[in-house]
Length: 544
Ligand code: FAD
Ligand code: N01
Image (tube, rainbow, N blue to C red; front, side):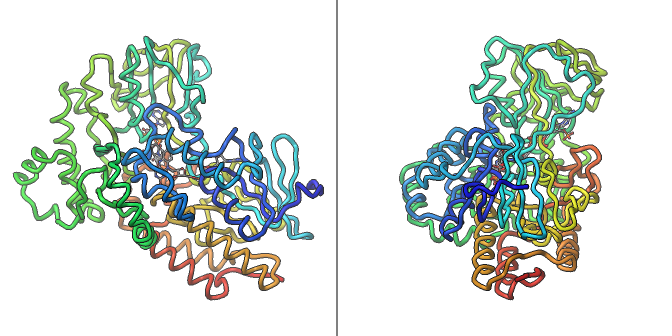
């Protein structure tokens, strides 16, 4: 039974106080609703609260990776770099929390364990790990797509006697690597961002790489005052363009990676080997940006991969290390793009060793380090940069039960099912923010978060206006949406047979292989969501 004290009986419980939960709180307050936000961490910021590893940084231009809901906030806040580093983004989150007095409705250090729909009251009963209960009409799961760190199950993993960290759960106090031997497992975005910074400080760094990645140079730089002024003056246009775009990024004033903006319009298949070689020599990795056909055609993609490998070969002094760093056997663009600062240069340092696990994998973790088929490695510090149980991980950790006590984990046993990534059939008045089936992680998340929260707020206001108690996706609408999500992902690099990305759940043993986000683009998707709402919430069942 939920606590019926007035303070724990609210209109909306929001789970999570990252950028989604924070905006949800602000938005629902505007509707005059009572809200409680429950957050496992000690403070706001979500991703940027937990991922404090050295080198953590956004790869979306900071003027675009920011809230658009308040003109004064937009004008007052001054980003200092083209792509902001984690401390600055966390400072921004704190600024927003202070400015809109958010903390008074957020309960920190509160992990939600279960949420159960009561069919007799049409309310959700929420239980926290500490045993506290809440009752809410609406439950908004702002639990994040990348908020459950994945630590692989490696034999002997509890044996290591030194310090152990995960990039996705980094200590608030920071870590001093001076004079230490460090081992790091994983070369995804988190590994690629942290490796160059750790290598600068540690006595020695050993990198365990299972799959080499494709990464582009970030070319980050301080933001010039006149540029920032111009961006602020242009904000209405920038925001409008972001909302209508494919991925919620305009690249205002600079292109991907902070370099000059280049629209991919050329066909790599129309070029000669000599031309491609010349371009690599002139432009390095960035030469590849001009080609449009590499996103859809695997043979074209392979030509781009050749260019990529040629550039790796040009940058790395030791040929064995160069070969180890060359991605093969999967297409460029099938995983989340990575951008880096001096990643490859790091492998030319004397204090860095690359262990190519394709030549012999990890056998076990020992008390002193890592034992592989190629030999043993000893450290003082071991870091897991091994990613997340993405998109469904945080929801799966909560015992969510809808009508007839059905568990969400059972309903999603064969993979996540949603209508528009917003709702699940059988789970009335429960909303997922940037859930599977929405553009989510394929986009600038701030744009997608605002769009979802705005839609949910409109929906709640419409229900109240029409005197409706509940809204629930129909199974038919869910089926149709899933079919569409799958259809648009076909014949893209994302679903290539050789691709093992977390978008597909392929990084978690036993997780069904389903492409989870929606490739259709944030502009198209927004139109669809708005159309559904305007048509009386087509595909949803509203009950009085
Ligand atoms: P989160 O920020 O993940 O917040 C979710 C919150 O929910 C967390 O604080 C968590 O503690 C809490 N929570 C979860 N489960 C429970 C529970 N059971 N009980 C209570 N609380 C719970 N996106 C981009 O668009 N551009 C980028 O450049 C970019 N860089 C990234 C870099 C890193 C290192 C990572 C990990 C992600 C990055 N992302 C980026 C994605 C990023 O997650 C989103 O941009 C955004 O911050 C997500 O906000 P959110 O509020 O939806 O989720
Ligand atoms: O995680 P990942 P991440 N033995 O899953 C390896 C966002 N983000 O934290 O590829 C050995 O990408 C695994 O190897 P393999 C962004 O959305 C953004 O780096 O499975 N290795 C891989 O190399 C990103 O995509 C930024 O063979 C093991 C690595 O660990 C997402 O978060 C920065 C292993 C995991 O890579 C996740 O990125 C950081 C094992 N048993 C994060 N298990 C920006 O810059 C796993 N690995 C915006």
